[in-house]
Length: 396
Ligand SMILES: C[S@@+](CC[C@H](N)C(=O)[O-])C[C@H]1O[C@@H](n2cnc3c(N)ncnc32)[C@H](O)[C@@H]1O
Image (cartoon, rainbow, N blue to C red; front, side):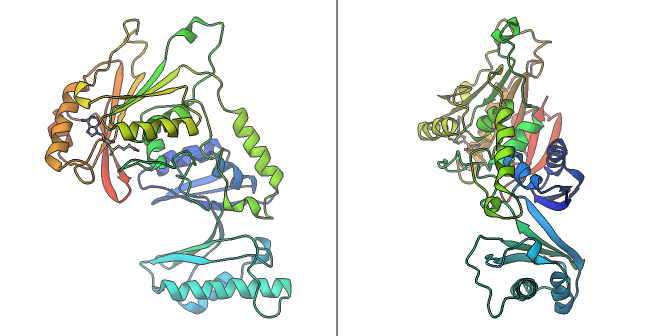
């Protein structure tokens, strides 16, 4: 079977998590670059990675990689590819991309040269006279020219992967689902085993995820989907589903395998709370759509009243780190002003008590966070929330 090369763009700082995720799916030759992970696999990886990746923003099929410092070199490099291996005669193939630190700087010129080279290759393969019809399926061509290295790719995803399909509704400052998935992974949420109905262990909750500023519920929903091993793309469609490259049976098979991997009953619960009743209504609807409503509850509560409420029967050694608190508090930009936000960080420091039963993972852009929280974090990790450079402060 033919081996293809892929590139998966992701948020900066989560490349290693994405690499592990792709290796787990059976990808080979996985290597990370800034904000991208390259990998190899058969055509079925198009369906598998799109359906299963929680971290990638999209899955791109790499068609050409070469050096170019002139428009002639750019044309020749793209023209060398036999595009009819990927695109049918009637394909629509819009071209977009970017040029960074390269001799070729004009994006619009590069766009039209790439378009011309692909059209020339298709016209010659299909013996087309005149213009190509461009009436069929969409094959979006993306290019990146970085330090004179050209990478020309086909977008297999369409709507970005953070659009899982469950969040038609969001509050004022929602977090991307891909970032939420990365945070719950870093916090240690893993797919759980099905409860053995004969075991007494089935009676107690072994993993509890809590988000006391849950907004539209993204962090707890992503945590529940992961614990239940629900593939994030199981219910959505992808642009490459209409491509001839990958028969529909493969999509059906990959979806079926993903469905079979969903856990039926696990020892998991997530609790989201917020002061905004409207956000909580949205969160409940989203959890329902995401198929995790039985595992997630939402309640109206001020962070100032946050209480870990460690169950009395919880063995503090056995249950170490089993309560996972994740939090994306207001930053004082879109919600609250900076003084109010910092006052809330101090409240968090008081309410997030140090205990063997819980770990805390707070994403915040404020460099002074630890001063307000009044405790040094055990670990810090740089992450981006959209364009905002943040740190994930971890208290373990
Ligand atoms: C940055 S948003 C969280 C967004 C969320 N991660 C999502 O994806 O929708 C911060 C949330 O904190 C909530 N909030 C502000 N002050 C709060 C307080 N004192 N107690 C609890 N929640 C609060 C806001 O209502 C808002 O929903």
